Each structure stands twice: as structure tokens, then as C-alpha cells.
Length: 98
Image (cartoon, rainbow, N blue to C red; front, side, top):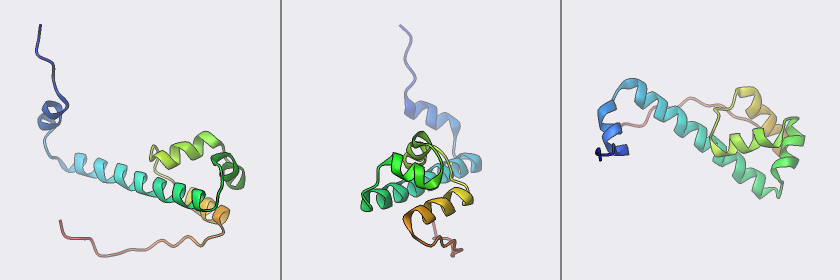
């Protein structure tokens, strides 16, 4: 039998590139935004279906958003804020040192 490649082997072969770091950061941002949407939905006692109706979208769209499977557009974030009765604030800040 041939030796199976592990995830660590694959990761090490890819190297640490700018594109990989950027992709990781984009995925992380999407996940964190999704977690915030879910936390607010749950705080208000809404189901995904109820939030979808308020946002004029579908439940699967909300599920993907909350799971971090998509990076939400500014329009999507505005609709979520409105559905929650909140104000959307977009801010620029100094980058944290690595």
C-alpha cells in the first residue's frame, strides 16, 4: 500500500504565501461575521426562517451566512441590521501587529 498524504503534509507543501494568508483571513472574517449574525438572531429569539423573511431572502441563505460559507455584501449586512433593528457601522482601524 502507498503511504497516505496527511493534511499536514498538504499544508506544508503549499507553503506560506500571501494568497494563502489572504484567503485564510477572508474565511476567518466571513466566519466571524456569520457568528455575530447568529448570536444576534438567537438573542432576539428568531429562527433562521423568521430572519430570512425579515431580510427578504431564504433560510438556506441565512444558514450559509451564519456558517461563514459566504462573505456577506454590504447590502446583506444592511438588511441584517435593519431586520435586527440595529444600525450598521463600518469602521477602519489600525492593523494589529502580527
